[in-house]
Image 1 (cartoon, rainbow, N blue to C red):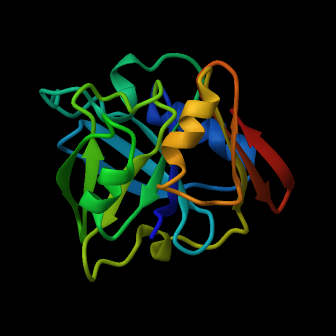
Image 2: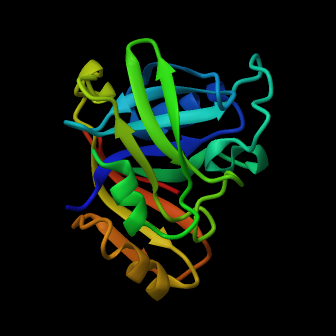
Length: 206
């Protein structure tokens, strides 16, 4: 069994800045999200079809420091809002971790409102391959996926391109973890580029 694409995390220096940038880029409104007390972050969401969504995530200025590095290397984030991480879903997190690149992280339990999930978080906050390798999530049994709460506004992920100087090594590391025809792995400076289809046409997030 391979893990499947769950969501894309777009980081921003502030949540307001990230929401404004994504709504301008996509031409669609984002929906309320919530706070992640264990990480000192907060987010807003937009659906990308069944079982899939995009989140804009930023450090929550009203939250106390989490006492550990935040996920998606947000502590060191600078610059314009852009894709920072992609997250794969697997109903057997430990099994997925055994197939994932070393350093993908240790499972942590999270709760927010009616949602519960476990996610592998690296001790350093930085995912393997300079943050380009995927994070792994397991939603709680019987918990409705967040995408079910989001209106379908016609947004769909078309292509996800992973850039890294060691593209072949990254491709090999992901071979047993994820098979998705939308995934591209190319040589270049570390980064994530998402091409999405909207009612207003194709948009590129980078």
